[in-house]
Length: 166
Image (tube, rainbow, N blue to C red):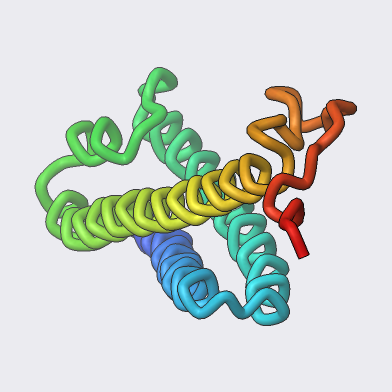
């Protein structure tokens, strides 16, 4: 298992690097959202897609290596790193546990960063919706501009804000 553990560690280190890249990309995305830098946000979106694709590939590779290592131990049911470490023994646990902890920490950080970005975007969309409703009331006496499905309403606006005696 020593050679298998070393190979697995190499793939886990790749996974760590991919997770760190995605985390940096998400933090950058947050900065671009707050700065309203649409051009850089689009560039970052492409970088984020690449990071997610890379992470997905590494995760598949890691899962396959865990499965193979489990089979090498005579345990075909092993599908997780924790189960593999428990079956492999103390020496493998000592090798893999610190890396597993770092990966779990990065997964937590990724989840929190995604949640922050989601909240920022939802808040921004809420402010845009409120502004559109305000302009709709000022320009059209409360007629909605968009339906709940996102389609343009065909209601007529009265242009109340522009009706003034000259």
